[in-house]
Image 1 (cartoon, rainbow, N blue to C red):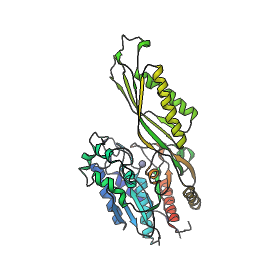
Image 2: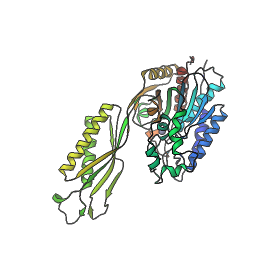
Image 3: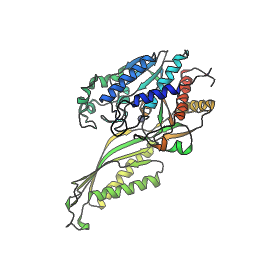
Image 4: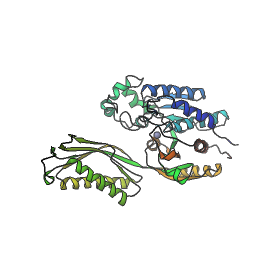
Length: 413
Ligand SMILES: [Zn+2]
């Protein structure tokens, strides 16, 4: 028996969803719990119902559609929220491909034994109070204080934003109580990088997902007059940051090539033409697929910043904002995906994911697997995000066949 997804229908779904939350800059702005997101949720729930799946929504707004069966569920999904001015494929590919897989299984009247679920997790992009609100709520690992006191990217407290929804801090904290037992979680996602395109492979089987540390750091010096303070008497906080940015990047690139360090946000104050900066605050993001390397980077980069501070007459301080552990994908899942690619005749390669994904968190309660498809020029989090639809067809078919293998149905491709 053979079974394939319906590409035209999946394409239609992705295009329809992309009409919700169109912004003036030609992209999609659909942060969780915004007006556009509430509309998109309504749209998705209708799709799940009309596919004949059992709809369920938890207290954090995570949405599920279930094909009944016995025992632990095999789940597949991703997220439908976007970054500000994002593209139409990040997240939606994962949710809508999973929906299409379940729809095909139901249409063909396949006799499944284990329950199958499509999942859409709230605020993967972290527009509210840190990344992965929905999947943390699903696991029950959120801190109430962060929800009650947390300020969102939009300046408003989370509790204010929740007033426009049916959700509350209590309902988010309770979301995990209704979590079904899950055996495995699969996620198909655009790669968000250039590797698959460069290697000319339509499928990437992820073998590990990088962990990351987010730190918020400051060099503190002394603001003084730009015209009258000699170089040797300055305590220029910005020069401390510049020195650290170059030396830190060189250290990671030479001693730990393949790992990443990025300074993505900088505030220099007082911030005037005529004043030597007294303070330089910056974000520090570093990532690795090895837990040991992550710890080593944490120690070495902080030590480097401390050395630079003392050489330049500055103080340095830093606090951890967020931390995720690297996750190795179980070999069983990787092997199943490789076998199914071979049966289906799809070229593939294995690769790590440098970006974080819901699958990385769900990995603490279920076996996880991830399928990447290429995105044009590696561009993501941008209105320019684009894919080749044939790659999506292959990726979604691999998802379908992996789901069926995990479920226990053996098919001839
Ligand atoms: Zn995503």
